[in-house]
Image 1 (tube, one colour):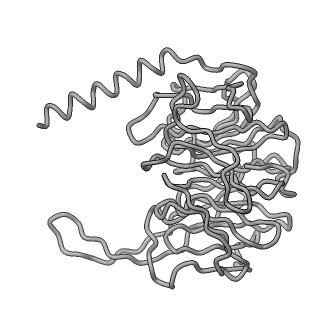
Image 2 (cartoon, one colour):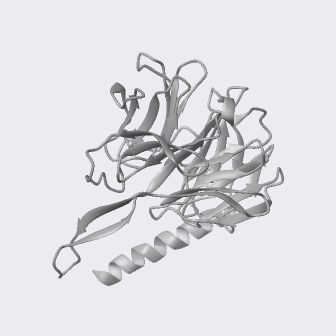
Length: 325
């Protein structure tokens, strides 16, 4: 049995390498962009030719903003950092400590303490930073000197939501919060006090969410059953646009993570290739509203699992809600 399993693993790895070797670095017109590599634990800036021009080693990063001053704001897995282009850390928030009970194999249960996982961050127009803590279920607004000026608890104090409780989240201009509950396969909108406003079913596990300027909501879905897709719903909950695995010939959609809606109506999506799928498709895909592929990026030598993206050749100030990602 062990030998059979090993052969399956080696066969899968060989197939991944063959697919990656046959895949071009780019197709179509390239973009200047910043992205995160969750498994490679790095943040990159890539030029229009597809070449890395800047990189920074960090933790398990899957949310990213390029700020108007040129600095990069991103999560680190258990915190949030802002880093200058000369790699100076100017903001460094650490996840709140919490206690949980773990039971090692063959050993007694014990209580341990560690920082909450963090997969969501956003710089606000007033200079404060929105942070979504996964395990503690806390939605926070933090000042530049780390004072918490707003706190919404989605879980009772002391309860551990677990690794899959919150992925991406966004602070909306009306004061509400959009939160992807990956494990529960639902996106929820909460009011400023944390009261539930709306549920959006998201079968397959939602990873990222964007409230579009037309009031619709764009959601990227992971790789649970029914996943591997990106869809847009109107305020009534009707799906008005969707791209799913099988819609793009030769480009399997595995675990959809980052997403950005462009001014021309195109959608850029990051195709996370973890969970044993390294090298099996393009990292980044741009599609038109009618699902025509106009750009792909696949640098499997440099990156493992691209998990978030912001295009730098699209005009707009992210602090004013003009970058929809």
